[in-house]
Image (tube, rainbow, N blue to C red; front, top):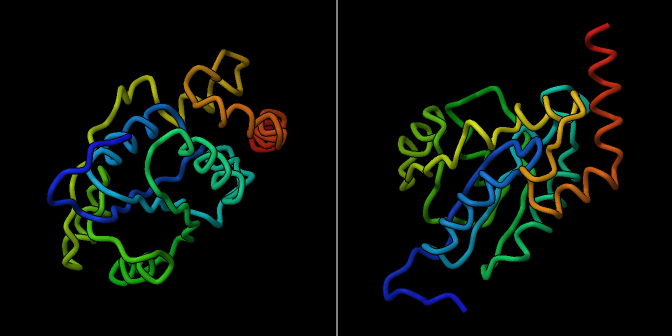
Length: 178
C-alpha cells in the first residue's frame, strides 16, 4: 500500500494521445501516482483514429490506459477529450469534460502555458527515455515488423491484438503511401 503524505493534492490531470500508450507514459503516470490521490488521464485528440499517426480509436485508447493503470494503487479516470481549435478556451473545454483536478502535468509548452494562464498549478512531467519510448517509434516498429511489444504494457499489446491494430495500421499506411 502506498504511504500517504501529510499534505497532498487530491487529483491531478495528465493528457496524451497515447497512440499507443507505452512504458514511457506508464512510468510518468506511476510517478504522478506517488504524489496525488487520484489521476484524471485525458485521451487527447479523441476524434482522431484510423490514421498513421492516430491509428487507435478513443475507446481503444481508454481500454489500453485503463487496463494498464489497474496495476497502480490509485483511483483513476480515463476521459476522451476531442480537440477544439480555440486555444483560449481549451482549458475550459477540458474542465467541462473531466472531474475537478487540482494540478496538471505536461511537457507540452502550449498546454503548460494554457493551464498556467487559466490559473491551474502546472508541473512538468519528466520524460522517460523518450528516444526509446515514443509513439512514433513504436508505430514505425509495428509497420516494419520489428519487435514493439516490449515497449508497451502487456495490457496494451493485448488490446492491439484484440482490435486488429497491426493489420489496421499496415492497411492505413498502404492506403496513405500508395
